[in-house]
Structure formats: C-alpha cells, structure tokens
Length: 361
Image (cartoon, rainbow, N blue to C red; front, side, top):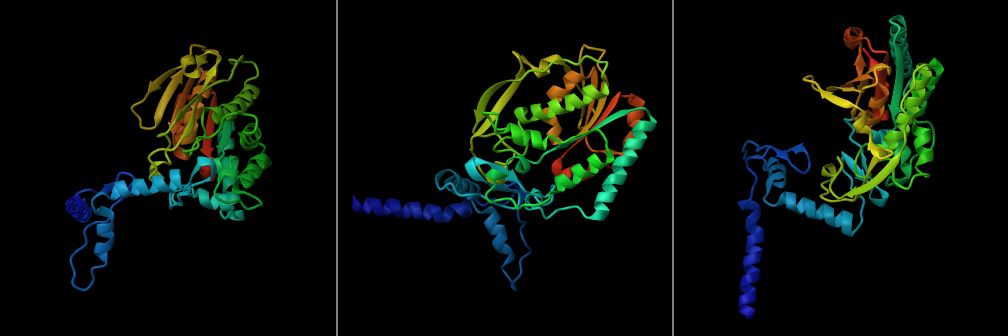
C-alpha cells in the first residue's frame, strides 16, 4: 500500500513537471483572460537566453488556470486587493478601471491631472466655437458630463483620495463661466447614493447602472424642458427591480477574476420598460443608431456620446420623436451631417475622464 502511494505521488509530481511542456502554448497570440499580446518566440542566440524567460512565462501549459486560481484565492478567500496597470480592486468588492492609456482614472483619482491655463483656455475656445455655431444655425444644444465611478464612490477605493481641486471642478468652472446649457450630475449622484438602497454604479464595471443613469437623465430632461417650454414631455417614474450577477462586468477580465457579485438593477416606468416607448432602428454605420417614438410633437435630437451614454438611451429616447445616436465625440467635420439632418437640439455627452475632448477640432 505504501509503495502504491509512493508511485501515485511520483506520477503526480512527474505530471506537474511535464504538463507545462506538454500544454505549451505555441500558436496563441493573445491572452484570453488578460486581453494582451503574448510574448513572441525570440530569435535564438548563444549570447543570452533572457528573452526566452518572458516567452516561456507567457506560454507554459496551465498558465491561465493558475492565474485564475491565484486571483480567485486572493480575491475570494484572502480578500486581498487586486491591482495591475488596467484595474484595481477596492473595498466591499468594488473594482475600478485605471488604464493610463484610456483616460487615466488613477491620475484623476490622485488629482495629478489638473488642467493648466493653456488647456483651460483651449477648452473654453472649443466650447465657445461650437455654441456660436449652434446659435448661428438656430440649433439648441446641451453638454453632459458623466462622472467617473471613483468620483461618486471614492470611499470604496483601496486608499483615500487626496483633498483639493479636481479636473471635474475645473471643467465645471469653464461651463458655468460661459453660461451654456450644461449638466454634470455628480452632486446629485453623491446625494442620492445615500438615499438609494442599491448602488448607482456597477460594482464590477466601469459604468453607472440604470439607477445612476436615471438620475442623470432626469437632470437632462429638466434642461430639455426648459429649452422647449411649449412641449408636453412624457412623465417618468422609477420602479426598480433588482437582480444580481456573478460574472458580469467589464473589469472582471482585466483582473483575471472569474466570478464576483454585482448588482444588476432594471428601472421601469411603473410596470412598463422604458424601451417599450420607442423603436430602435439600427444603422449600417458603425456606432450609430436611431430611435423613434409615436409622438410627433416631441423635438428631434442628434446625440454624440461615448459608452456612458448607452445607459441614457432608454430614458432620453422617450423625449424625442426621433433621436440619432452617434458613438463618437463631435468635431467640425460633423457639422455638415448635423445640418443635413436638421435636429431641434444637439447633445454632447462625455464621461468625466474624457470631458476635455467633448468638443474640438
């Protein structure tokens, strides 16, 4: 019996030693769980074998399974905070996106990305130019800034946010100083997060959820009603149905987390889904679609947006007889397209980390 155990043990050890070679990933180019390019096979050289280190470390058999297990053990068992150059794990299971090449939320959290005088003046000039153009063609407009997740929930970050001015407050000052139609729901969301039973942002995703988007959309609706005082807009109600997921969220794969619980609410207008009030029409142009309602007395809109605008679509679409959504930021080259479609209002939406480029050349 003892000899049999020794044989089994020896076989297991041999398998562990041999499997990284047997399962070696020779053909793969991208890591499925890390969303990055794997190290390529280096040219052989007798002078140095160092280039082979990263090649083997990226491709040995069973690597992905070991990474998943290590992150599961750290995150679910030891409750350690995870961190890499793309995302960071915070308190109470909250995850935050921090990529330096995609808006650099980490610099924003640390307040090391404040605008200098030249950047502020450039932003003023760009906004003024767009506003003057809209006025010249008798077109109403509205600017919308969607707060970063860490701006609303800094308390769940793995460490405290420094005191002092933020880039968001600088941008607020620019818009307010110009006196243009503008919505930044940050203060409202900070206030409402303590009133709501459920969070306003997804715990495992970069974006706000339908509850947070609802409060932002309500502020947008208020501004639109001011601009069209003679139009009767549909009434809104908020009934929340709460669900949960263990696998949803765009940050999970960035941290190699297979499962993490996240709140997944659905907001209804009474007993009816907001999406039931309009028809969505897909376009053959990438990043563009249209919505239509049956109320032809409502205004028409063209909306330039980013990924945060997706959660606003169910609400905003009920306010317009026709809305044209474009997943891009407005540039001078888009003026002809706007004039050809002749909307009643032009809406510019951008997440806080990209708010500086909400309009420009």
